[in-house]
Length: 191
Length: 306
Image 1 (tube, rainbow over the protein chains, first blue to last red):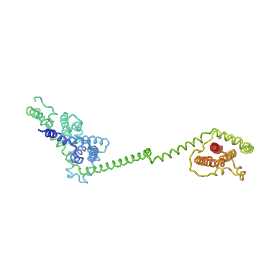
Image 2: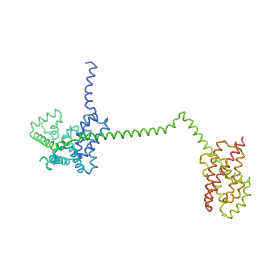
Image 3: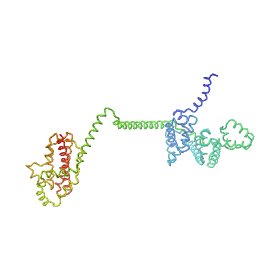
Image 4: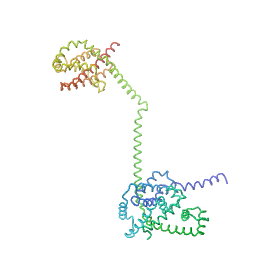
């Protein structure tokens, strides 16, 4: 193998690695991750209107710090960590969750965001509320581990998001799951 | 793997988070261990229930379009704020540079700096000339008064006034005013107004002297006579006795003092029993005498050296 060929061969893995960790554009990041951010925010603040505020703030922070954020591989973890921080801060200054949730639901119905029939909508709302109440009873960081796992995050992403040791994530997910099922059963979920 | 697998590893096995080697070892163990197999089954069941429990939450629609609109608006605001802050920053920078510009010694600034320095130097010189001989001024006033026989002329008339108005008022005021002269704005600059006859106007002409003297306040007469003699002394040196700049400064200061005298005189006449008003008037006269005395001295000196 010539010197030039060896150099080219050596450079290939680096190029691939760089491509894997290359930063996404802002639009790509929004398209890929805004659902995860919004859902995580909504699960935390239990208010779709507030979740919108949180999502906006998270992506504004991404916009401001686009050159300092991690590559594609860990961008979702970064976004969700920011989401949780912003959501916690939002909740601290927020005492009117229920009222806002009702207002948002009314607005959503009026604007056609939700298309479910009224009775179906009611049932689904009850199920959502039960799952949220059960999730609320679980202590941190098991609660966040479980939520992020349900969002499809890998253990590495969960560890990155919550600043945990990756080796502990499996155990935390398992304990969170058991705790959730215990509380969820008591509340009356999975009827 | 003979020992049972803990719940964390079983969960990681179920979630596919173990390395391929560990996956194989755990799978082998589960196949041979009833307890771990049951635990694994429990994980599968509960995970399915968990997914089902969260399904309604995750099936809620995400307002993608609305989020995007809000975000675009927020980004537009952000960029507008950044632009305005950058503009403010550049304005601030240009302001600072405009401040620092005069201090960059460029040729076109040289003339400006030179004239500024000349004006400042002239001001300092005049201030020095005016303020230096304060002590001797009082003496010179006395000396000038002697040469014009002011005391011998004025003493009897003054005594009459003193006895008519207030016996203890006039003489101490003159002494006090001489001992602690007030500047009365002598050094303050005013727009130049050519008024060479101002001093002459201030001194009452002989024809109307008796009528004017009747309205004079106690002690005022002495100052008027001293001013008249000083004025004569200054004018006797001719126009060349003083440098033009000094003359201009003298006339300007004289005008300021005259205005002060006119104002304090009006107040003193309106309030004849006000001791402070009379004292202010005499103090203004004293300032004028000092100024004229200084200038007369300078004019005399310059004519001597010429």
